[in-house]
Amino acid sequence: MKKSVLWYKLEKINRGDIMYKIRTYNKIAKEGINKFDKQLFSVTEDGKNVDALLLRSAKLKSDDIEDTIKVIARAGAGVNNIPVNECSQKGIVVLNTPGANANAVKELVVAGLLMAARDISGAIIYAKTLKGEKSQVPVLVEKNKSRFKGSELAGKKLGVIGLGAIGIMIANSASSLHMDVIGYDPYLSVKSAWGLSRRIKRADNLDELFENCDYLTIHVPLIDATKDMINSESIKKMKKGMKILNFSRGGLVNNSDILKAIDSGKVEQYITDFPSDELLNVDGITCIPHLGASTNESEINCAIMATKQISEFLLHGNIVNSVNMPNCLVNRTSDYRITIVHLNNPDILTKLSTIIGDEKLNISNLSTHIKGEYGYTIYDINSQVNEDILQKLNKITGVLSTRLLK
Image (tube, rainbow, N blue to C red):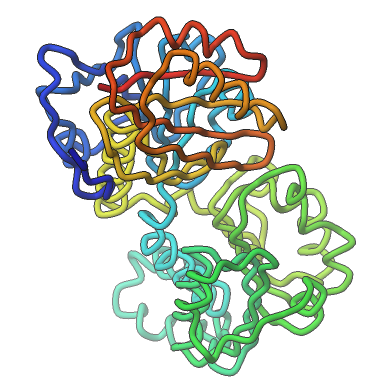
């Protein structure tokens, strides 16, 4: 019997009294939690021996990752709070929800552009000081408003580093504000390219953005290759008076170098969603308390997406939006499905198939997907399968985890 694997249309499966246990960290929107079928899943905030973890910004420690865990989902895009490498070595699939919070971040970045251009926050603070001046308030306003005179965004050049779900939305929105937008992303996907306005120019390298833009906004993950990507060397290449926005991760910008650039006037404004002690109360630096995805709509969208992805993986073995394993959506063609997380070793598929063959199992479908050093293989089996086959598969060098779905 063919079963749908469209992850956003989950199929209810009769599994008797078998239930998967999900542990949540942080406050996960109830609209997402309610997407778990209560006949198949139990959700707890402090349970043990769980099958999955669902979290937002909670920092996971090694002790939190029990041997029973099969999948971890982050209701958000960044996964720097999850020990991804450790999970990969244990065969645990790590998921995120790219795009679910994109609109929330985009809107805050647009607000950041306006704050960088007009010193809106400084003007608001000044206006508060006029309390008690009574009839003199209008006079003082007119006398001092020139202190906060800014510039318009229209006609200015904006460089967007990273053209993923968020970067594309920002590029398009800035273009609609009549900014001249230049984007840089060497890994731009075909899907992303289709969503990019034809008015957006593509840069071949970062230097094009540094040397030509008036504003710069960063939308890439924090990894070893991107840590401190905005530093003294890159700042030297920028136009004097550059305005930089960072709503991705604090570690993308070297704080010591940005402070020196602000002090020298090389960088006129730095707007960041990641406050740190040295950046607070510095003229030219505006710190926002990590509000990028903090909207009701964003939290609901992320929770719903994460819940559905966990359900699809636990029920069908399909992987959607994994950061450490290959994505895999395979129509289920039989009542028995074996899933295997393994290293991308050259002979491992032969060894897996040998065991399946020795068991004289009737394979209706076989699918293997690779991502870097990891692989994920699915066998759909028409004949009855016993649990003990997993023990044999687990003995193969390079096999990290196995499951039998029925």
